[in-house]
Image (cartoon, rainbow, N blue to C red):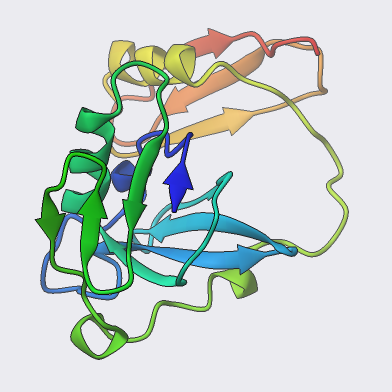
Length: 170
């Protein structure tokens, strides 16, 4: 399998090792193409991959991180998954079976099916920086007027700190 863009999908995996079915990514077929899917139960990430798939199933955080370390720069991550993860440098890591990690959640059921009423594009770095600036590490509330207007961002809690972020025009 060759994966050229795994992003950092492990950031969407559960940090809790006791939640073994969420502590992995799952390589699955999505709309006829392979994709890496990860969820913590709070966030869901789906990353299409350009891959020659020898087997679908669970992929550990360790395998993704090790593969990315081997992929210097934009070079693709290449590994075979049949009897464990075998990397292009000859190293190996064990591959969990579905019996080891349990059934991966039915992530399709949480994706909204209805047509969106409003679509905006935000720079995630700016949103993260603003959440830190208004001291809102747990959650923020977004107040959106339309796709081109400034978006009011409020912290949740005792102090309703306020920030503003501009959508990106695409």
